[in-house]
Amino acid sequence: MLDLSPDDELALVVETARKIAEDELIPNLRDAESARGVSPDLKLAWAELGFAALDLPEACDGAGLGVVARVLVNEELAAGDAGAAIALDPFGPAMTTLLEVGGEEAVSKLVDAVGFESGRALFVSDLDAKINVAENTIDIDAPWVLGEEARAVVVLSGSEALLLTDGFSFEPVRGAGLRAAGAARLVTRGASIAGRWSNADGAPRALARARLYYASLLLGVMRATCDFSADYAQQREAFGKPIGHHQALAFLITDMRMSLDAARLVVQEAAWRVDSNLPCATEAASAWAECIEASRTMGPNGVQVLGGHGFMADYPVEKHMREARALGLLCGGFDAAIEEAGRALVASPTPLALGVEGAL
Image (cartoon, rainbow, N blue to C red; front, side, top):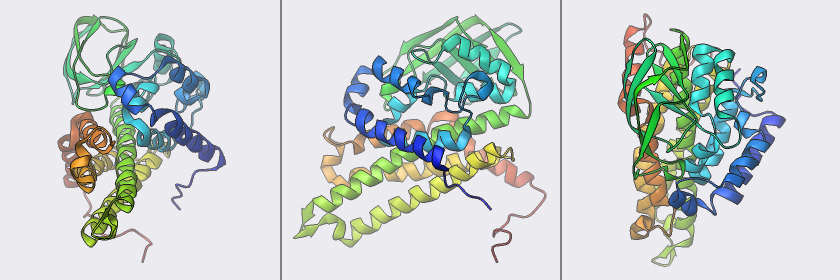
């Protein structure tokens, strides 16, 4: 039976992440957005707690807790500040891409290049950038990456994963959301390839893990929107009672929560499939598409609950809306995800299952 309840160890990890979000990220979210980064002290504390190595293999001095753990922790952090959550993680999808395509040897090279405390590795996929790979060099033009500096760049192109440790430059851009992570155009011209691995089976799993990484952040953003707008609707009064007691807003807030719960279920199931070494590429693409679609209405609806106040920086819902839209552009966005899921459905030799086996 599928059981997504965390054990005691994982529950403690998730609770610690939640407390960091409440105590450190939420009170400083506007400062982090303005500074386009998190404080070095917070990043050091994050590494010392072991979160930087959460899903790193044990052979590489990591905790090896897997994708479900990463998904749960990311949601907690992003409920505080999704941009800061990205900035705190030194590896992100860059590490899992090398793990799936190149194995632990490739991951060790990345860890040696980046470290745990102050460096960052950035992930670039051929769904989001123009990439031209030669025998020993690579040209990249990525209009938007989540950072303005890095010690390494990991590229997922087709069935290959490539590691770069120099030869790349950043042109900062303003960015609509996730500014605490930084935002820049990444360009390389004839950069040397420090490591190159090919794995036709591992590459789809690498993309699946990247999508689930960002989907879990999107869950956190949507949860923050739901929580704040629901609380606001209980406090703000109109016509003698809280606005949340009027049917129009009550139904809207309920629909928002239902969409969040539905998206969380498909993300966690896809994460469980990765950890269980089951086919996961289509499921991750479907989960990513579900999250993006839900966020496209939830962000504006969260603002709508607050009315004109929703667009003011005094309240976080305008930030939630911006960051949800920004996250939804990654890994090819909605279109690439739905196309991949659709191709798998069309290619399936069996009819579409309309029920769950054993449920009746």
